[in-house]
Amino acid sequence: QVQLQESGPGLVRPSETLSLTCNVSGGPISPYYWSWIRQFPGKGLEWIGYIYFSGSTNYNPSLKSRVTFSIDRSSNQFSLKLHSVTAADTAVYYCVRGPKYSWNAYDSWGQGFPVTVSS
Amino acid sequence: DIQMTQSPSSLSASVGDRVIISCRASQNINSYLNWYQQKSGKAPRFLILSASTLQNGVPSRFSGGGSGTEFTLTINNVQLEDDGFYFCQQGHSTPITFGQGTRLDIK
Image (cartoon, rainbow over all chains, first blue to last red; front, side):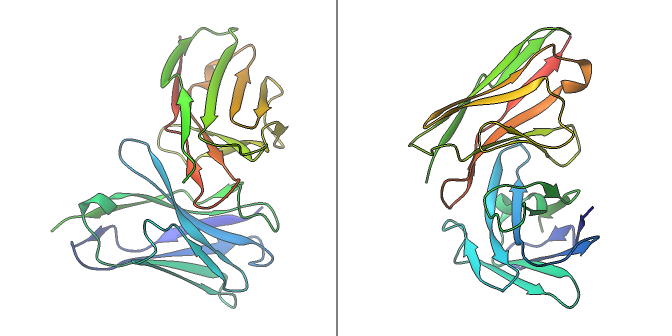
């Protein structure tokens, strides 16, 4: 069974870049879509986007100007960079995967990684 | 963006009750509607795909229905372990969007 594990700094200063990595174990990177979803303190969820194993991406338009995804198939990892962060980016960040070939459902979730944006 | 509206935002039930949670989409999403359960401090758990397909390991007391813009999640004979936060998610088009969630407390 695939396992996903987020890692990165839990505290980021305003205007800096939030960088998270998701390590995938117990399953292959292909042929899956790999997504990032965040959950705000009030429980609301926001889809950040996905990266396909081939490297193609789809970002939420609300974040598109600030977000970059990458994938490293040799290391079974994918990453998120969110630039110019503010306090509004404080959330729990999840890396997730859907069923094979599926970009629009999520059956495997990381445990979630809390990120606080504060000086 | 497709807006997803859940109701109620919270509810309380007793063991053995039937619980129904509703989810409405702001436009027709066919059956591209998924349901998740989240326990406190945990990652969400995938319950139902495409409005009505129960995922492996999910108890049969859970069921989903609807299409178009109106959907329901039904829990028959609710159990103590069903307490948590439930949310819907549309998979019709990007950006993917979620309902605001329903908090279920079991008395």
